[in-house]
Length: 302
Image (cartoon, rainbow, N blue to C red; front, top):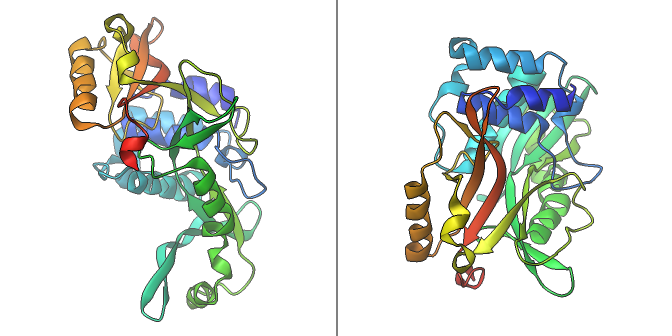
């Protein structure tokens, strides 16, 4: 799949779920590792044509794609990933969201166990979509926190590499796999697309394990926002954190002002996008992203 061409053509998708699925197909990962799974390496050249056809004729799309999204972003991403595997790659899902039990208690879960038809092997995919904000520590070093600051990039990466992706090695997991007729080797894979948001006023560097071409945004404290800053902004509510955003009409400044008041009142970070009119399509399309956080973040989440 020619990712640049595919990206250009999918920017104008107007059905949100199709646009989200298209993004998952080609989104840069936040972890560079031998275990990293990049769907674009396996998708056929006609996948963009298929997505555009689903966008124009939703009746041709998988029924699951047209259902209302779950409230939790992680559950929605799992649903999209299921369609990526089954409907776009044509791979068989052998196990999905199967809990691993030991002496009556849950000790973990397998996100997806699939038959990779290209490499003809069984793979265990652990997936997560992540958004991290770089908080300066010393020099250009930073700690990368999720909007909920109990989540951190270094901790999540370590968990993915050394715990979650290795669960098929557990005896209890091997028994679960055997029940599904899987007795041979299982290759671990990690799928973790997302964004890193850089502080607006300081220079920080991403960890070495993050690919250089990762998606970027900025973040700032609420007190740093001036009224003139918000021209052209829109608030991004989940599941529309899965980008890029586009809309028919111009941005609503009053809605953005209300969202900034929500940050102040409820002490929660919120995500915004800057949009500009694309003359060719007549759509207002996202050009960059910004997280605005309460003035005591990340301490307010500890």
